Length: 467
Image (tube, rainbow, N blue to C red; front, side, top):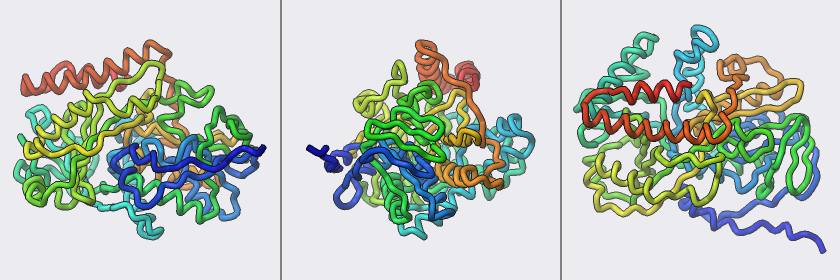
């Protein structure tokens, strides 16, 4: 009897996030790899990294045989569950990049990220991907004296690098409250280099586009190992001229890559659609994304249908880099996010929380995102986005195109190209260190609230993260 290759129903994936729940139509699951295969490029991972790489490769050379191998469904991971910020943020500072790769490297990387935000907007318009792309910029609030101090330091450091007000502007208390009507606002910053998007509609729409360009996406196909020219799955062996690792938070599931990136969970909540009376006071009229200068990261956006989607760190790292569906929902963390949201916007105290979700993102040991290729082995990779991957994946995709096709371009000269992060420590050291960092970030925020100024906690946290 032949094996049943009929894919399962996709409707169960609506529970993954607000964004997945809002996808239109029936959610079909693509067939799995039917057996052994030979292609020019095998992309492991059906998230934004793998799909952007496939998009640009297939446009550059329509004759390439490209297969995307996804253990679940396209967009299952962080690509379809994130905060919806398509921003120019990069995982390490311009100063760090200059030290690593020479003066001017950081500015080159930043300008490439700025261009990436525009590039994503161009592609979604040209390809007709309806994902609510709205370039409203980002407001980062200062809500305590210590946060205000960090705001002034950020502005001074930016001016020292030649960054003008058109890129990063200080907001007075009235200006900041005019954009984001939160409590206790003492000031803030504004950058135009960010767009709010619906990430699930983006990644699922991009998957359809690459299929129209001739790329084949195999879902329900778990990859157990990768090697030069060979991808091993439970459904067959794929031989390829180039293998691309695009697995981000799930990289630890590949044999030999267990300590390359750690999966750290970020969780989110979303309210019911809110009345115009709320938005008249809360602002975000341009759908600006927003955060504040606390240590334990928060992030939010006004969704296209008028909800507040809000997330943050705080979920624990799980021993052994374990990933389980149950970790996507942590009642304690979700309740803490709700309290923080109400603290920012007291009018939401009675608002109904309709969605709670989360998922793992990938972090390298030095928090340094990278893209690269081992030319002799034809093994390429990209990842370690530290939560800023919605846009960085696009830059990775264009860079992978150039690296795989052997082009020497401005993109292949950027400082993140072929950067190699050292592996994470074995357990239990990384479990202790990562969770200590999370607790220290929360302690730093509490101490600043009490003292009204930065404390030793912040200095210790900076040393731990930079270690």
